[in-house]
Length: 260
Ligand code: CO8
Image (cartoon, rainbow, N blue to C red; front, side):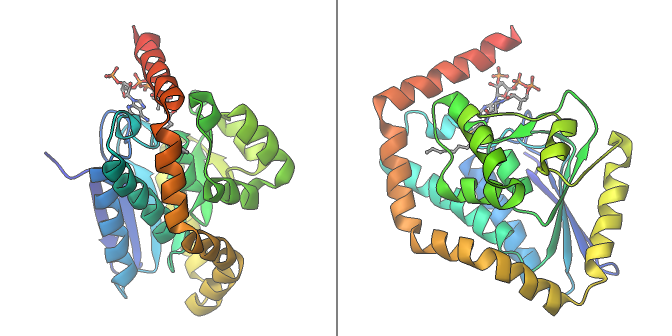
């Protein structure tokens, strides 16, 4: 089928637009993660590219986060491979040399929210139907430490405590209020606004902006890199538990019923 990652580079502006296109909900399967990492690495290696807008080509959905079926009834080997790919996506995006802007033009639960949090700036479409947040506890699972750190370093300790324990999904207005997104704009203006913002960030000399970014993010990245293998083992052990498998199955059934 068509590629799940649409990539467009404006050489003159030095800005790439990456659109997620994996219907119905831009779920992050292993295949999708692999494509996404390849695209990001390609941009990272392209001297002509200095900025990135990350957005969705699926109406109403930024990304539903990790593809839950990747965590149901899989072998340990497959789960490890999947989790390594999730880590890789975060490492590339959180540590990118590019100025990155998330144009959140739809719902962004869990892994979707993490992708947005990994960017330098978040713009969300002002549609009260959309939600953003780390809702892991609602599935009976737990956001890993680097998901937690990404949120903590964006919204602070108190908001993170409530947010993670309750698995809160925020409307655009609420997300703006706690600083989970930086601005909200009418839905039809979001791509134009993202281009404006990325241009603002690119007006700063790259080396100075990059060193400032790295000063804030390197400790968080180093912490993950140091514990990467243990984090994979923890994930595999946790997700393989019977009780967790049951909980994920229940959540998937709830998603399907909601539809009927
Ligand atoms: N994975 C797999 N399938 C999904 C997912 C998903 N994350 N989300 C939705 N789907 C499926 C639905 O089951 C449905 O399938 P079908 O057509 O076969 O019935 C189809 O996609 C369309 O979904 P909806 O009908 O629900 O579409 P809507 O447009 O009404 O709603 C939403 C879209 C808002 C995205 C909604 O689908 C939703 O809330 N989905 C759940 C998202 C979610 O909770 N994601 C969490 C994933 S976990 C994660 O990312 C981090 C895990 C960290 C692991 C740590 C362990 C230690």
